[in-house]
Amino acid sequence: MTTTDPQRFTVLLVPEHVEGKDGATVEDSAVRSAVVEATGETGASGYPRYAGNGIEADIDPRTRTVEALLVDGKELVYGLTAKVGS
Image (tube, rainbow, N blue to C red; front, side, top):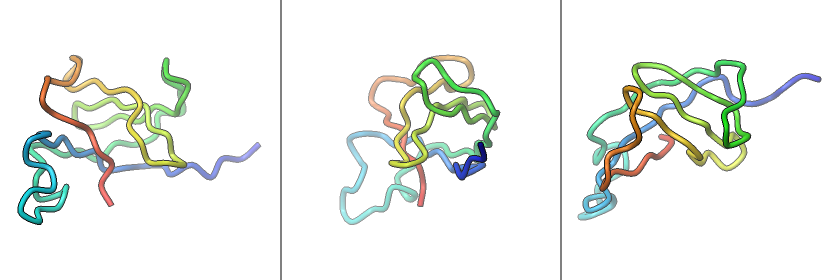
């Protein structure tokens, strides 16, 4: 079985209180970003695991939703949200 899942995504960490304010894009609002690449593993969430630049993410490739995330080995800090860049 071959997969058509993307091999890489850009994950953006965005403060919840500024996302989309004053017409800012998600990319403009990000406090950190990382290109993550497919590891070939499935995460605990059941979605493919992607990793790179200190970020590990389980991403649903169909909806481009971050289902689980570790930043530098820790859970995401309260007040930040993770988005997949366009």
